[in-house]
Amino acid sequence: MKRWKERATALSLAGIMLFTPAAVRAEDDDTEALEAQLEELQIRADAQQAETERIQGKIDSVSEQLRVLSGYVKDAEEEYAEVQGALEDTERRIADNKELLRKTQAELNEKTQLLSKRVRNIYMHGQISYIDVLLGAKSFNDFLTRMDLLTRVIKSDYKLLQKVLEDKRVVEKAKAQLESERKMRIALVRDAASKRAELRARKHDKDVLLERMENDKALSEQAYQEMLAASKEVEKLIQARRYQYRGPAVSGAGGLLWPIDSDEITSDFGWRTHPITGDSRFHSGVDIGGDYGDPVYAAAAGTVVYAGWISGYGYAVIIDHGGGISTLYGHNEQLNVGEGQNVSKGDVIAYCGSTGNSTGPHVHFEVRENGEPVDPMSYF
Image (cartoon, rainbow, N blue to C red; front, side):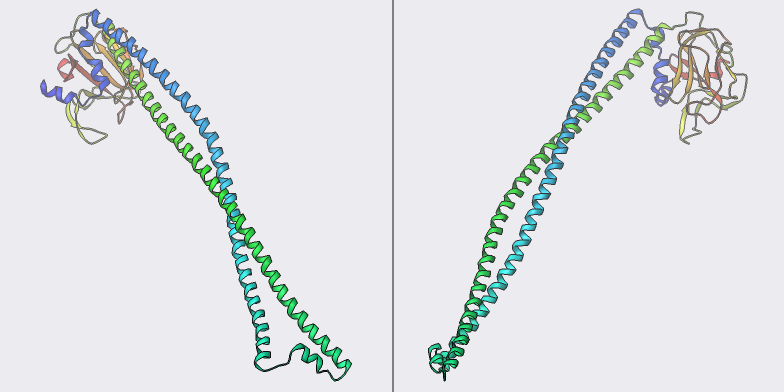
């Protein structure tokens, strides 16, 4: 018996709870306690659901704030890109102006050197002065010619120097203007970067808050679902207590009716290799081959304590026969009874199928004594 208890832990929670002997032998005060527990769970579930809805309301509010803030961040990004582009354009123009100033200065230096060279040649080679040139004229016409030539030379030198100096002044003025513009652009970029950083930080905070709220919502929803599951299990226990069979108990060999017209046993009670997973598992009943839609019979008179879906068993029926004896009929295609219904031996309670973990149409038939699975063959 102890060995069977250890094996039975591999069965689904739903099957164990529905077959527990406490569900058969419970007193009225136990039922009242369970009903109080169920009521408390429902109240807590409602409160948890309200909390989930409250969190969802906050999530919606933060999501809207985040949407608006994202728009501000986008505007700030565009503004930053614009002023950064303007600064880069100013930097390019400054670089161009520096190159122009360098060329202008080089030209001024070149012209100055030419003038200096002419003056130096006059001094070194003893060339006469402008007055000597004029006084050396042979005639008045020669004097006028010489005067005209000297005037042209002087004007040319003057214009040359004035032009270079003017060009230098223009370039230097542009340089000053560009430097002033550059300082202004740098200030704009700095302000835009600061604004962008602030908005990014605020958006990040909202993102973190939204993520935390989503997590809180998920946890709240999980707690709500767990409470609903607990409430469902308590409800099943209450139903099991309410749907007790009060008739004579099943006893010994020959006490049960074979549950289906077929006599083909496809899997015996006990340890076996699972047909789907290939693992070695304890088989808590016998599998009897059948065809889709074959009637499944109540093995004995009793009260239906469960009729519905059980994980692994598919659509199943559980009947309490009194005296701690219960039977289960699994993998049905369709059920023909409801919880709390009294059935007689041989009544059609379901129709054969292959629902749940099944490889083909058959009836999985279990017998339990005080919640422990036993070999059904000892009852036939």
